Image (cartoon, rainbow, N blue to C red):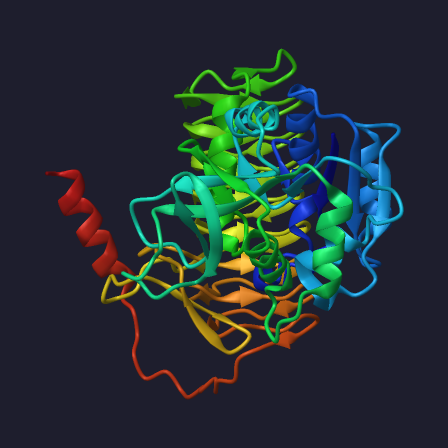
Length: 436
């Protein structure tokens, strides 16, 4: 069967992360993790759908896994999933598996759908069993057959306990294409409407129950669970070329790549990934975090439960529960707040909409090429756009758009000093201390 990998999204909800397909987990971009999963399950006849904004990068990354991959462009990105599937009309025939590049599942999910494809039904959709409400599409099921997809029902009104995952098998791509071309909707659900029309006309589609790992990457706080998943899958160990001081402490599961240096007094408490050439300086603490290639964790810095991309520099900082882009530098004393005073869930401003992260701890999100001055504080859930410079000694409590220069305003007051200090008094104190 053909596999149609949908990767044309503009990652609007992930901003200031530019394109989630190229987030590097353990040194490898997400799109390659996804393609390797397909390859392991014998799915190697692959078509990748991208947009003008990422087509060339997708092609380069995809060819490292599948040299003969076909890459096509979705011209109208506003058509969403429907437009992505239709973009392959000139190269796709027969049975097709539709797979989202941004929905991370384990290998068992692909095995289940491949096995199901040997059945007699005309289509199969992977359904994830959930115990808590998820704001997405739910499968309406009757006697194992899908009767429709209900998009974002109100909590308590879900038609089943199975969420629609974008792992769909269609026995006849040409028929699917006809329904997509004829479907009409005023919302971004034309694909789902087309499926409902097919079912109404007698096309039988069956739900394939799945209970394993699933994490859609829609918002920045979804990055950490995906890192945790890939870390668990990967072989742990310390490179022979890594240099670890005798007084440093490395414990728990870790992956330490080539040429990493961990200095005296530092603590690395797994699960931790340290990319090639990382430096963890004296008395620094790194725990439950991902550090990309070339990161420098400076003296007395703590990095906790965070995802750092490549070339992030810190010095005497606290970085907690944050997602940091490439080539970002923090001045000494800068901290990321990650906990509200009322300890309620952190809400993030996404294009004017307040979105509940579902987490009571969440810190800073940055794009690439950001510089931060000394002694600056970021409030929980703040986002800083790429190419921005943030000045020293200020509190940043709202989102910063890309290529901003942010500085505070304060008055420095200078007057005559009327007090004096007697050095003899200090000597007396020292003598008392020395004499017990």
